[in-house]
Amino acid sequence: MPGTAGEHTDTIGVDQAVERRTITITITVNEHPVQVTERELTGREIKQAALDQGVSIDLDFVLYEHLGQQRTRIVGDDEPVHVHPGSRFEAWPTTTTADRPGARR
Image (tube, rainbow, N blue to C red):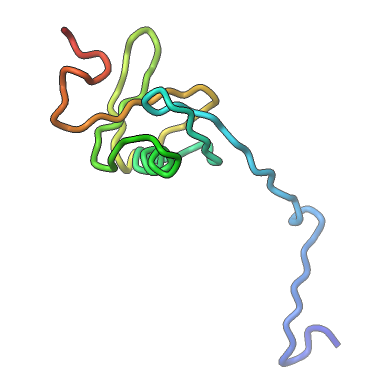
């Protein structure tokens, strides 16, 4: 009989058996499309996804998020970012200032 000593029975109610759909969101990092499957990622996770998909960056690069109207902001490695299709990022070495997004020339 299920539930007797020594037996383990798992039951899942209908409301607990909701299947999660996998989503794919395309963002860009240094003008390269990058596919991610989470809506919220840290700066490090964005850089790692870009690296894994062939974008030529390093994990120690500084990540910038494009905010529109020629504005950017730095995203910290442990900082969560809500991404959406079309989110744009750039990653640059920490010593490169002239080439970073929004740099004055």
